[in-house]
Image (cartoon, protein in one colour):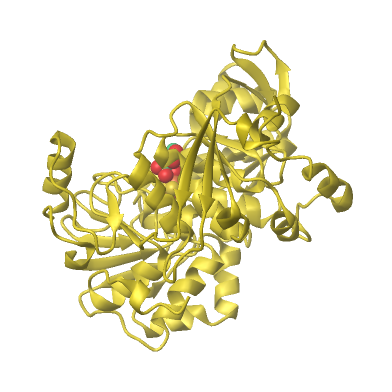
Length: 458
Ligand SMILES: CC(C)[C@H](C(=O)O)[C@@H](O)C(=O)O
Ligand code: SF4
């Protein structure tokens, strides 16, 4: 019996404990943000403990950051969380990408962007979308605040090893269909719990042909399918992405030689395999209140099967039999750790160029990090967006979860490049429809979703 990529990552990091029981795992990098760290630092103080390896912890501000004027934090709770992290990192000697810093941004955007995220690492963060970093062949997972404290104090964490699942993704992506549609389509078909108890590895020709940013979008949403670990085998695309980044390993060649050992020996080593052919996949749009409530853009919304469906339809104000083209879109949101990277903004800008959004639509473009923002401005994307009638904002999580002032009003339908469409996620009563950046861009122009396979160039 060989080993999967995940087995190899696990075995490299076990410090103590027996197989089959919780084992103590060494953590190479902990990322921190202002929402899930305050009690962890407070716990350290109360127990008179220090941070074991401050240099293996890296903090940023993202969830609460205002995107119009980032220094003008109106909300008292937001301000408290931000100031608390600023004080904590000072006290414990941890690096922080502070408001306005050129490296500040969403935690899962800046890790890869700065070269902190490398293959072979164990990366944790008090945030459920940490599997994003698994796109590099890392074991990356979200943890709770008490675990954040444990990692700060010991640089280790207790974990029970999950089973291994392989998701074999093959076929050529049709025109107008993107990585976001792959993960939405997979969750729509398999449900929001298919990954419970598993670590998921995405593999196959489709995955191999994706850029790192596309791979990140897929791993990012693994948690929406019930698994907290998602990963992809590192390859030349991965190595090229990391090269030259600020925190990339100094001895890059030695690192690459080691990273090349990180692969699944044989698909037979997975406990379970899911086959996903994308050659007929349609652009996806969520109609309901969890990411599994998603259909192809021309597919009628499903009949009501249970109480969950009934509640979802009540909340979202739509009916079975309608399609995404019937959704009256009045807000569009471009951003988040799923689709707030440069390639995502490029895809949206390509659609917007020379056009104007529907007069009923308010559109916010929120880059995932300041580096993304600056790179986009260098390409003139900001101008394309503002000429099209969108608002160009400061980097942060923003309307992905509406902890800052960017909230969608009750009853309004928002076409969104984010990852969660839960009740109230983008504001009390707000109705979220998840889709790819190109789909959201066309929805903003038209005031409803359209079948972009008919108009997209690639
Ligand atoms: C605030 C944070 C704990 C949360 C998460 O864990 O994912 C947030 O990032 C989200 O996307 O809902
Ligand atoms: S962008 Fe959204 S999903 Fe990502 S960390 Fe922020 S709130 Fe969570």
